[in-house]
Image 1 (cartoon, rainbow, N blue to C red):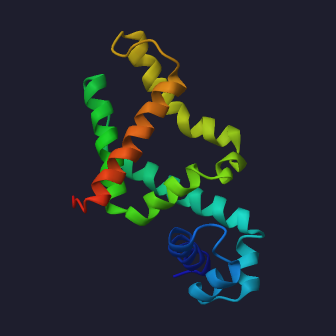
Image 2 (image 1 turned 90 degrees about the vertical axis):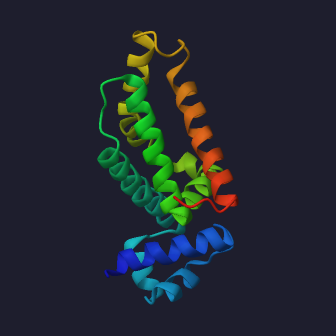
Length: 167
């Protein structure tokens, strides 16, 4: 396994267990089995490491959803497929999903590149706009609808995880 991946895995484990501020980079380097300088070679600051880990998780989750939720004949079926794929990913990747929740509830999410966020959300927003145009979804702001769906996914996953639901 490459050093960058070892660092990300160690950071994930420790950030979820100890929090962002409770996890020194020296502990992450030690857990990953690399020198402090090696960690800083890949991630110049702790903020860069947190953002890098979030991006890595987001890319893997998006790939899973795209691979497992193909467009269907109807809007409803497509939305259901994406929702279920997101939920299944979360149940299979509890630590990563826990990190995502922690990240979204921290000030670190404000450090994300706004253009990159918009690029990632564009397919979802376009689909929601199409649902509004086709009068399948009530005409509300698309970012509001996305927030409702995301919040529901986070909440349901939290409930299922707390009750030790297995997929």
